[in-house]
Amino acid sequence: MKYLPLVRYLILSDIHANWHALEAVLADAAGQFDSILCLGDFVGYGAAPNEVVNWAREKVAWNIRGNHDRVACGLSSLEWFNDYAQAAAIWTTENLTAENRLWLRGLPRGPFPLENFALIHGAPLDEDEYLTSAAAARDALDYLEPALGFFGHTHVQGGFALRRHRVQTISRVATSATSTVFEWDPETRCLINPGSVGQPRDQDPRAAYAFYESGANWVEYRRVEYDVAGAQSDILAAGLPPLLANRLALGR
Image (cartoon, rainbow, N blue to C red; front, side, top):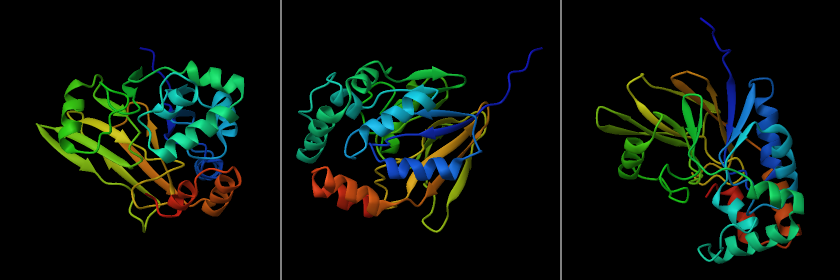
């Protein structure tokens, strides 16, 4: 029998053009992974869209698109964005290189199957849906095939696990810690959210990410401090709405 080598994945989502946060995550995770997966929203809100996309084009093995990626490359209208997101989307579209805009247009939508799991931006049936409740997660987990999915979009680290008709909400890393491991048994179906690298919204401003090993029944959630002031300064210098800078320090 031929055995495939185990692959340890670095799982990222919602970088949102925050180069300072991405640099901190990569430094924190250095030497601990074999391959990188990203669940979408490379751009939007932050001031470094080309830097982030250039990096992803070279370094990330598997990518899917997010809603901000679709808007920035002209695949979707920005009418559903609030005023601040619209301003950021317009600025991003104007500042992206033609090559990076084309790359974003070519990103696949989720769910994207890979090994024993799927990559998802919002939800399995709707890439723009926010999975924030156990009830919504139950519907998604009933539909999801395979039994493990990694999703983003909410900017909230954690996720949901379904076993014997009961849904468990998975907690993020505590603010007093830098990592936590969530384990499940083979009968459990899971939707795992690594959290947002560049725009956390779970009251913890630290950049969020996760590790997963192929075939495993566990995920390691991580948080790392980054240069929030530097990211804020870049946003303000680009002429983007100050709210987009201020919220980084609050994690919401």
